[in-house]
Length: 345
Image (cartoon, rainbow, N blue to C red; front, side, top):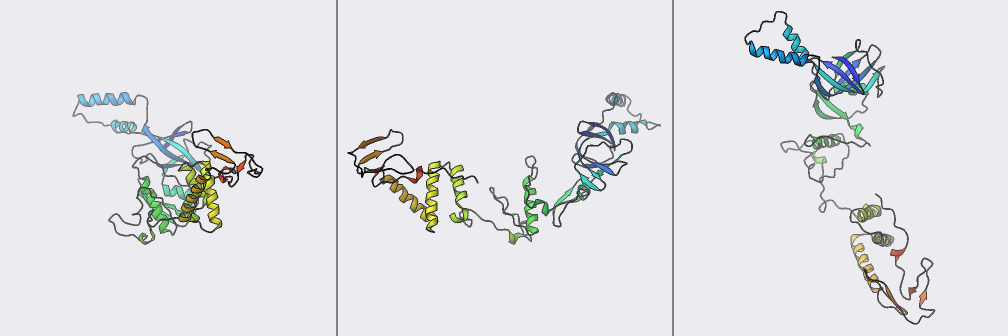
């Protein structure tokens, strides 16, 4: 293999038909200096040599018209076939090795005459780049060399891992292998299994148990997966009400008031929440009735009408929070107080 030319960010490499280099493989270009360039093949085409298509067409015509003539003393046909099958590998530079250390820089061009291009296995690449860790997850074999491929479990710790690929390309299978490998290495893994795919992660293909079968515990909502209100927390519950159930800000403020009241009494639970909510609704309903000194009725969708009796100094009072009069015996609803608390989660 030889470097042919550089086009923009692509490096084009010429490869003979006998060289087993395919899309996705890595190449290393060793220069005369103590540095090497790492390439990855992303596409391949036939080498476009001037006049090659005309020669192919001419040979096909001659072969079909003179069948039986196979003598080629100078072996010109073999050389011609080699040239026609030459491939052009389109590569991207992925980094360089300088003085034995990996660097993401690729701002230099190796020599076309003095450089040497060879195939680089994934494990060789990882050894050059340096993969920290002592616990490796075996994922399978890769490439034409059929070499073992594994990744360090430490590389998944505290990081976001994204698996991409086309439909039915093996994304879910790879995710299960990673989960199984993490459990084998003693890590804790929590999977939100919406489609019930990971329940068999501790089983073999024939249904028999693996060495991690006893470490896999499947929990199902409503059966053996339950959360208490205190365990979930106010922030998570209000976020659920606001973003999933589209609860209004007024209702959320009232819910927060009820929650804090129950928490102060150490009665935080679903039963207490239902009882308190019911009594609160009943209290709100009773407050719409007639009270001495003033009658106020509000109905959604209608205008507010008020009929005042003869006012006396003892019938109304003013709150420091509001300028409107409050009927005697009534109270200012907490739903009208304060801003909506942040519930981003």
